Length: 222
Image (cartoon, rainbow, N blue to C red):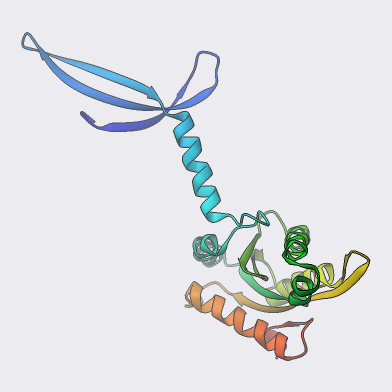
């Protein structure tokens, strides 16, 4: 611990907490070892670090987690599913009709739609689940602790599809919006990498897109 910088939690006299950096030095004074400790309040620095880390993992527009965060969340969620014996569901969705919104009403209207979609997805899932803006108008949803696997995951996917689908109104005009959703499930003990699970969900999303859009597809329904 000597001549090292340690970060430890501390408490003020008023009971509030803070983070301090402690540096301990050993001094030789007249042949006696004397130890000195220097404490520095680094609470603001730690809070700034947390904010920066949050910004790196969060989509600035919608407030959802971003693609980078998904690469961290999905492996951990799969590991929890393996330990618990419950199912994990992964939904991958791409908006139908979004290009028409941008083309007819501009990118500001497109941003509004993305925020509405993000809010709709969050309203359809539990706090223990995770919604991600993957890229552009693509979203992913991680559903944990599913008891019946595909039936549970498909039920949530249909709920999200219903919440998203419908006309989007701008300046007295409207554009129909929908989504194509691919659904895959990870069962405890399955030897499958997170990247492979994501690719499979993406594959079924494209199958849904080619099947006529506005639908949900999965291996369970083929």
